[in-house]
Amino acid sequence: QIQLVQSGPELKKPGESVKISCKASGYTFTDYAMHWVKQVPGKGLKWMGWINTYTGKPTYADDFKGRFVFSLEASASTANLQISNLKNEDTANVFCAREDYGSGVMDAWGQGASVTVSS
Amino acid sequence: DIQMTQSPASLSASLGETVTIECLASEDIYSNLAWYQQKPGKSPQLLIYDASSLQDGVPSRFSGSESGTQYSLEINSLQSEDAATYFCQQHHDYPYTFGAGTKLELK
Image 1 (cartoon, each protein chain N blue to C red):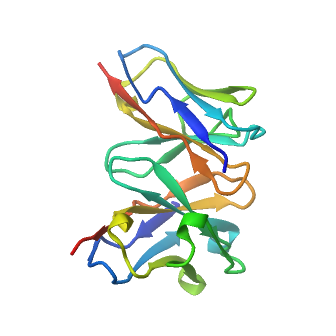
Image 2: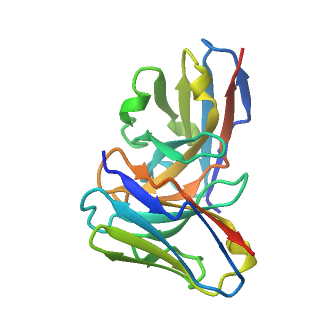
Image 3: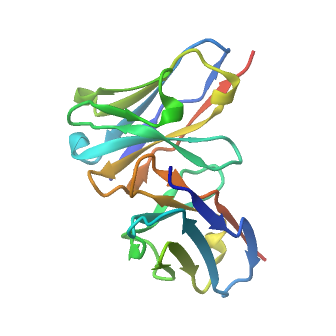
């Protein structure tokens, strides 16, 4: 069955970096785009951007340009999100979600990765 | 950016009732709208795509419709497992944007 399994919770200090992974299984990794979505606990969903799993090209929403990097380990069917120079406002659950190219619809989601930034 | 104004923010309904959740897009999104259900501590799950197409495996009591830039999610014959937060999402243009969510409570 289709699964997106994300890495575990992270507790970091301001200024540190974090890398979140999203391992896909049950489908051909390069047939679907991978999106990243942020959710502050108890709040709504914010789209961070997406990565073309075939070419590796990332696209970032404006609020996620600069400190955020999407990358791939295609041989391992894994998408990664790295956040550098962490700030308190990065505290959130971050989801990966796949999209059938061109559909715009996220039809399978990871379980979420919790990132807590606190001094 | 396209703004998605979702209402109501919360609602309470009884088992067996029908409820409607709405999203108003700030511009024409040409039916490029999805609805998701999120239960506490879980990830969102796709219910409806392209405004009115039911995702595989989703019960038929969920339906979507549109009128101009107003999109609606209707849930018929409410079941206890429908207690959740519901989000709309436009995928007409980047950045993809979500409504603020509607928390549905069962009485």
